[in-house]
Length: 124
Ligand code: HEC
Image (cartoon, rainbow, N blue to C red; front, side, top):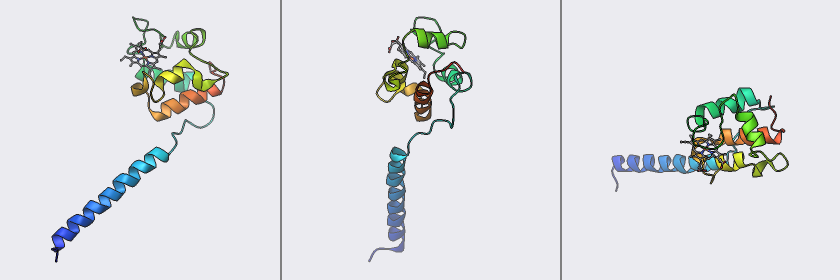
């Protein structure tokens, strides 16, 4: 006969296991939500670049300057955006899962970037 304490410990163990595994499963299934409605370049995209990219992409040695004064032109004229095939855009591919810049973007930022391109990559 197991002691009460052992049974309690086992129960706690099982419950946390359950929460842990269903928690992970839930994370994988939940799609990343981009902000609702139209994505704004100045209100949504540039703040993301400022916070996550400009520390390196600032016109120094690294290609693609993402500073506010030049980022839009760099992206469009540098060929980083493919409006016909948004998922093939270099910008998206680099920050997407498996891309070289993956670690600097969250799932929400990835979804937001794709949505911005799908909406026509406007300078809005
Ligand atoms: C810690 C520095 C660093 C940060 C932060 C960073 N990058 Fe980069 N990025 C680089 C370097 C270095 C390269 C060039 C070498 C390479 O492709 O890995 C690069 C390459 C790229 C390229 C390809 C450029 C080309 O012409 O080949 C894109 C697109 C890019 N980064 C986007 C981003 C975006 C968007 C962010 C922010 C979410 C970001 N990077 C954050 C350092 C960084």
